[in-house]
Length: 366
Image (cartoon, rainbow, N blue to C red; front, side):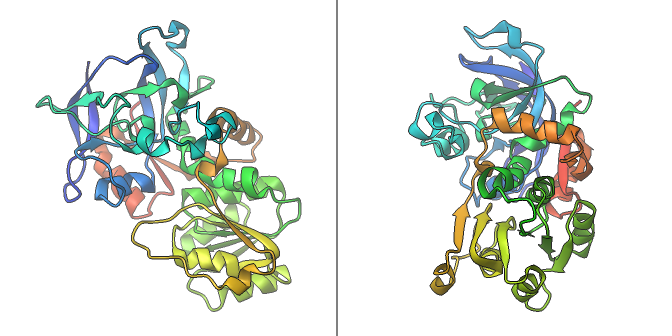
């Protein structure tokens, strides 16, 4: 079929909406008519070449939409269902069988090779050349995409379906780091370092958990003000004097938990410095080109720990419905983070996301 997609051709050339050909869904796939796709830092890493991915490509990995067709042997009852799209996993390796699919043995090939496992691409450009695709199994910065069944999370029909794709990566990463990994007790102290979409999701999850105090750290006064609206009890400028010392003073000896969401070795080290003895820190990002993480081993001797986290340790089919229930209860108002942009104005959406003018920019197709 003929459709349209945002095509990223070269790191030096802005993405543009182009007509593309999408082949029929293969066995084990469905065709989704996209309603929206969130924009994430990982899209920029792939577009810039910092994350190896074959260009030219269709990117996007926070899609939501409606199933329009199924592949050979597929269940036609899926047609018309509303779905959120998340990352791809194999479903058969030891990690997947243990409900640890973010750590799937085939994660890199399934999400970052630019092709299906059989080597084909579902997208071709106007010259008939195959495009890099299957980004996180979906490549959803398009009006239509072919998506593996394991990527799908069925959700009830909603007028705001277009914004729900944001749950499929960044928001589940931050919220999952708190709810699935750290699991703070009521009244426990939590520090959030970095207030992009991941950090704001972590903050909302900490608030929903009953954590107190919740200390937000960022370089932007505007983001710190927003963090207070979302439940932060304290807001510290990252460039301020002795941030770790301020955290120790606020908490009376250091935080029980910290979530690093900036993807910087500096903030990762700060997460460790902020902890009390036996404190735990979740590291949610690692931006390319930032250099190694330098730690003082003595700071680990008192039971402090750092834990890397992918996708919030989430099983999307379980965790995304949980986040929607929290939203319905008023405990996870992620809709307040979202700014919608018309898909045809993809340049404005990408610029707002890249420059931090939108906490969570979402391209709207419907």
